[in-house]
Length: 95
Image (cartoon, rainbow, N blue to C red; front, top):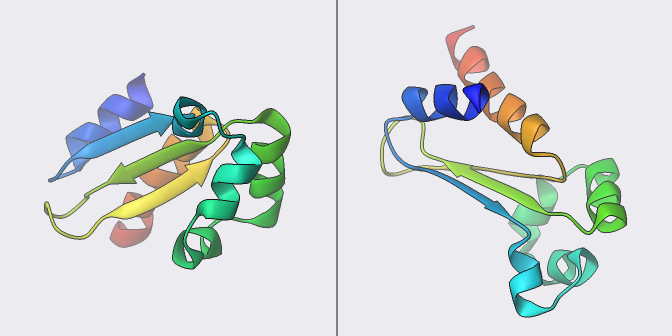
């Protein structure tokens, strides 16, 4: 929870965490991944896609670091890893 709180405090816009939205539509992770847009898929490493399918888990983290316009999107199978990746974008910007 601390990582989520930190991300929220750093963002000037919203933070949206969605877990397993595909299950609301009776889809598997594989089916959802097949339906994703090319620009979303391009951002996901093959090893992460494979694990998302194996675990039938899709974590989607969308956050607006600088303003309510211009977001980052992270897809993962692990909430903690997605939050770490999001927080690392702030470190990269300040490096």
